[in-house]
Length: 482
Ligand code: BGP
Image (cartoon, rainbow, N blue to C red; front, top):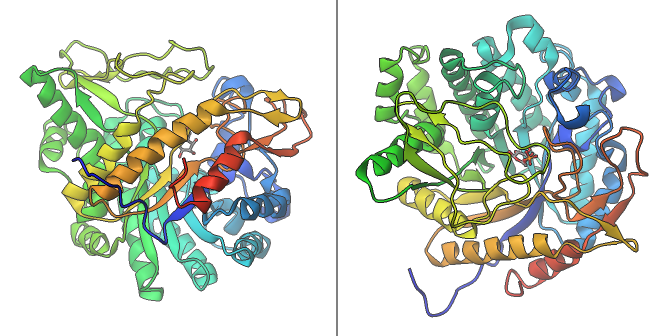
């Protein structure tokens, strides 16, 4: 749509930035914390870039006050962070660790002291290893109760101060990388049946948490964060348009329809049935999912890139378990589902050094699609550029990051003009942090952290980058000065 004059961002728009516990905290065994699946996984040779771990990460666990002070100086309105389940319940269930609860109390209070709205992710991929050992984590229905119990502990402890809650981060990514590609814990490959079962358990866990929260705090705002990659048909050939429809049903609506409607898309379900991979659904599950969906307040969107769908012959490419984790451009591979679609490169779009497409308009399309299909408010819970940064004379000049964010915010503004109800925009990330599979050299932050791959490198000192000062202006002018 075309508007003569932009209405701009809403007055109370939440300009934010994000992180996740495992990627920033460090303190991997501090103050009674239990072992998480990631603490274990990163120790398997060959799993992460140069064997990097989050043992120390960027030491946010000990430096959170300095980090929050920098946020306050920037004028940040909201900070999205996740809670490490294994700090709260070192064994996943049972005994509670007061020191862990206290750490997040302190962090939340520190944020509120400066008027920064905490936005809490309950689960950002680090599950207590004890649950993996006890019953294979997400593969067992038992996790639903343990997750809801953990989430409820958080709601009870922090619900008086935390208004925005995100139940799950990128369920589509942690399950596909964990059970189809073998690149996240538990490192399984091509296990379609378990993949869908695990997802059903995660859906039930999400739903249970939504219901528990609304029971305790009806005014709270809750949703899940979905990694949404909108998709273009390769060209006007009908079979490529069908490939896009298949991609959307299996890769996007499969999750978003659950969060928003509490149902699985019919055509995706039919495909699963014909392949014998439908999950076991217990009596009452679909009713619970529907009840929770009716209470969800927003769709959380992590937006990085778009993709292309082209028809994929039955003998065509499958899932790949290699990706560009080195930052050497051009090393990513085409993947797909034989008989349905494959995802070739889009030569209309530039890419990052890690071969992710850069497509600001895709962000506006995400918002439009969610608005048309679900009519829900939207929280952009992640968006950002992973890049190599250089320190020059004590400063970090990152015009490429500013250009990336500026272009995306411009498109987001258009989405608001289009009528989409966007509540928040969180960049990924606030400080530099550990990129799960790509080490510390793939930097996303407004605040540079002096460390490299080697655990003993660097002072961990913080230096605001040029983008930090730029975003400060964006916030001050509510997105008018970009
Ligand atoms: C999302 C995750 C984040 C973050 C980001 C960047 O998928 O929610 O935790 O890591 O992507 O990805 P990467 O670190 O792989 O570059």
